[in-house]
Image (tube, rainbow, N blue to C red; front, side, top):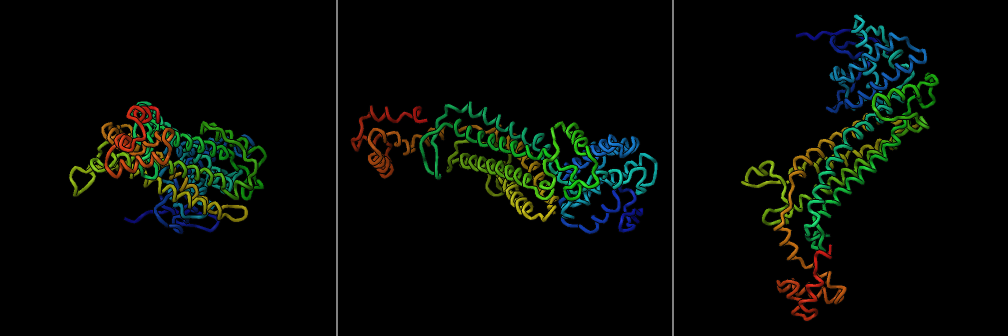
Length: 461
């Protein structure tokens, strides 16, 4: 079949656009010029740009720059996009212009053509809504695109990632309380250490995640200050007085979050330090999750030749050749996600440092890496909680055997007999494969009563 096209026009002339497409000339040029990779602009970012266009229409109407008909058409078109009716109309890849101009124009063009459909006029006519003169009025890509990144990142963290972290820590806290009296051997350097309760061990995981959550929430505060009104380079050329305040008021209402006008447009548009800071906190969260997943892998190792103090859900066979083998696959999946996020953070750091003069030209990459990290972590955390943490149980038998065999309980004897004698007891017990009490009796350093009094694991934790 022959594919049908229509002609659309931009400042460079006419170009063929698929007949049914709602995008226009500049979007089509980007499709042709940047057929790189499979990574598309995240839909969350498209929605945030759309929220800005809706807010801009309201502000421009209040300021007398567009009439009510144009304002209403833009708002109706934006709402259809936000309702997910036109997701397929945003096909552009991350690997495009570093400002995101083509994606900004993609949204402008789609809004213009939705308005054309509603007005029963030809697609691409730029009537009754022009993509530049009406939809993009009082804006530039250079202030709109970074503002949209900030809005989508804040919204995704608050509405998706933070709730999933809280749900995970609630389950960990519940298990920590249930296991608060279950005493086990602690370990440092992969070697036996003094006792700890399983509840204390799990509580450490929960607190690590809560600290990461708190740091992440603090880091997004600065993202609530938007550079709208800075237009091309921060000076606000072609932006009327009052536009930033009016548009940001509408953006706050649409997102049910508070946003403010930037204190310095030049800084937010030329560099994305605050976004890089948030990404670094996301990396720290990933590091905490990586550590926890590794701990669970170690503690559930076995079942016969490992530590096996934790019993994890048996979700699927673990080997194509070894019957009955079950692996800590949820830990592995989470660890891979965390590894990817750490790589994304490194790329964001380089991208943030590589901006030049009045603009950072790595905006799509920064947006993609942060939003993808949030989405990956959110999904992985939920899966980790549901498929592993909620069904994870202690193995009291293995815990009891391991603590009874440990030589590091000898640490409790140090206040009574000193470090060197305690070390001598531990070495004798190890070399002769006897327990600490037998070694102490053999060396004559304490009576049986004094030994039992000192080795009280309930007091040691």
